[in-house]
Image (tube, rainbow, N blue to C red; front, side, top):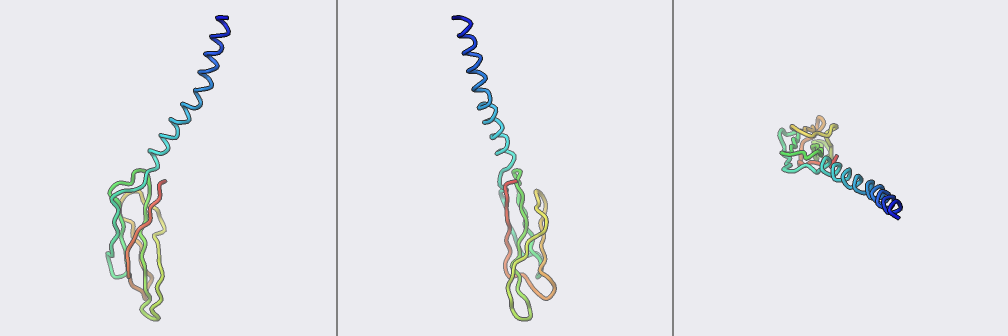
Length: 109
């Protein structure tokens, strides 16, 4: 009887171990992939937008510019090609257009 009890206890510990390890792994993953905070974007030139976040928290961000053509008045948006985790993200409107609005995108990875 004593041997069966020790096998039962050992089997119970093995059954619980993967669950304990899984929750630890999930917590570590969530902590490493937070959303950026303290973000802002502004027009830095007549044809450029800059965006920056004070804390990336493991996430990334990039600038977005709403542009308008001088000829024809067509509006369109452009986004920076590279996701940033620090520093200034800059995007330019093409030649013959100007910034009408500034913004930014975020992602948690």
